[in-house]
Amino acid sequence: MALTGVVLILVLLAYVSLEALIYDPVFGSGPLSDVLGVVVPSLFVVAVAPLVSYRRRDAVAWLLPPLGLLLTARLAWRLTLLPYRDWPPRPEEARRCRRAPVGADEGTTLYQLEG
Image (cartoon, rainbow, N blue to C red; front, side, top):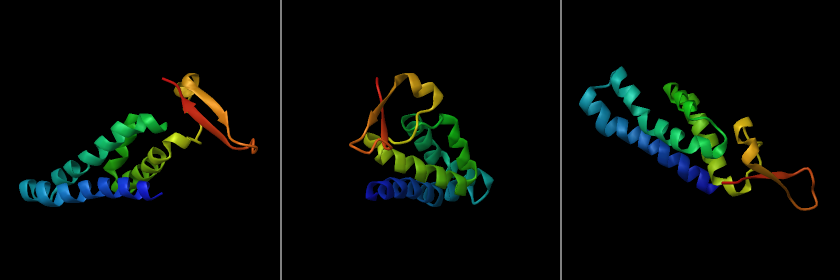
């Protein structure tokens, strides 16, 4: 869980610091600065989303920063738990996914992507 917090803090620091240090002084504190401020977090979502069963187009959620923050928190959580993937695969991932039952508890299933 600590790694999730670290990933989330890094994305948020990039969001806040780029906006405060670069975009606001260059473009002023207007709408252009706000839109440019979400570029780095959106690139994070684009890069990580396919690994954790989300779509790249979900990066659009950063146009509403609270929603983007929630999505990024969930992506960071799933990214840090990737070896213990317990969420079901997306339909397009299903053919490359293999179920791996865990221990004596048959209710717990982990999924492993092949290839």
